[in-house]
Length: 233
Image (tube, rainbow, N blue to C red):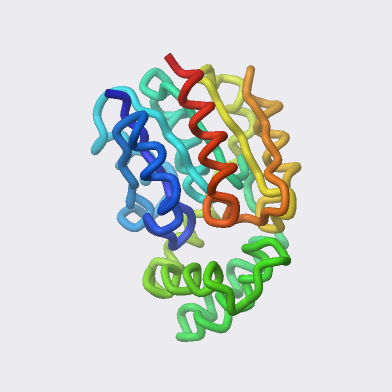
């Protein structure tokens, strides 16, 4: 049976895939990875994933999980049968983003994570999602559950990441690239350039959606992922 590994984003857990796992499990064996909590760099996260999950894999990553998926296909292209990248980027951080992450790290280390995370809700979701909505509360719950140490280590891993755009042309597996039309954290142009760089990749813009598209538009995301799976032999 085909094996699909779902890769959550920064400080996220299986909650971000709560609406995908039941639908996708009908088509393949599904594992939600937690390597981002157990390694300190994106290449190390990818290497841990590949060591722990033998054989051929289908990878679907959202946000930082997409960055880990790109590292995995770079390390072991012969093992990746399909790739789905949701709300992610192949770029390295700009100096402006580096400064923002470093400032956030200072706040996390000082025990002020909640204030930073609450402010981040406006960037994580489409404007129609209010700060006291069920989606926002769920997001805050699982990120706060991850803890300050994970927030610091994972932000540092993203800060240190390489620009993977030059490696995209070597990806040969069926690839889906999707992004929310209102994603402020990894804007649509990041997704478009990934899709343009991977031969034959499919690009989809999800309407009325911010960064957390698996939670904001689960039905549309499920449909896209099922179509992607159907196209993989």
